[in-house]
Image (cartoon, rainbow, N blue to C red; front, side, top):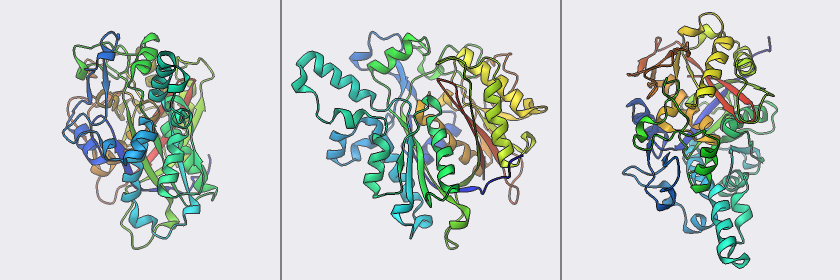
Length: 421
């Protein structure tokens, strides 16, 4: 068994999601069982097979990207804009812990599944309809996947490296794995890590719908995303960003407040099976689960709950359920499992980071949000899925709680994280 590595402190976080414009609002909406999924009203969506999505800024607070400087609104794709808003939140939240840290020792790791898809679509339309002279000269820097990481480093004046894992829907979680490696290898003293995605446009919706990956419950948006539900028919495309600030425990200032939580370990594997479909028995995904637990020095019996990747696709949810049963071993069927995509939709490369923030809040508060729309539960999903009402966790003061968080991506990318609070 590997020696458990030094745990990493999470000292700041930021999030903009279909449920809210910051981590607190997102958590409160998740705990209340709210849905962030709505119908698309734009004319460009009128002939699409899937006309529902999860979008940032649909609530009373409005779109947080409108508060960015006008120059950034013009020069950044929405994917980078969302990342920047979340990163600024996380940076501010970590102020007490990062005082005195050398900017040359601060790294940025922001994953994405696609990157600047809206820019690609818009500028390709310009090219076809108006000719080469109408293509924005900033097209390439706006659409490249590393734009968000580069912009955050520029905005905050950070020089310890800017990195971009592009691992489909596992990208945000893989960013935390890379952050762990950078800190453990002493390549940085602080890392801002997370994910961002903005795929809610005509090209994104058509592309995923052509794969038959999306739910087409256009008349009931709030009921469309059904992770682990018997009637699931695909995921709902969403946008958003989540960012976390990570530091070594030994580097925390003695005068600073306790951290928000801990990243104990990361496990990883690859299916090596199919570019889209998961390995159906969950064999290699279970390796990532077991790897994370071993590296954390824990057994499945130590877990307070599991936060599943569970997108709501018929094949994917079943494969993950099998992976959990394999990876958790005997007694695993009794561990509470929550599936946040019923409320958030699927944020693709941002999902792993946003959902990690929700998992940490659940550990801190001692309560797990319900899995929206999982009823009726698929009888083939032999797991203790939290439904209906939030679940209170046992333990309290003096007893540390642990959670396992899964993130899987097209191409067979498997990441599992062990978190503590």
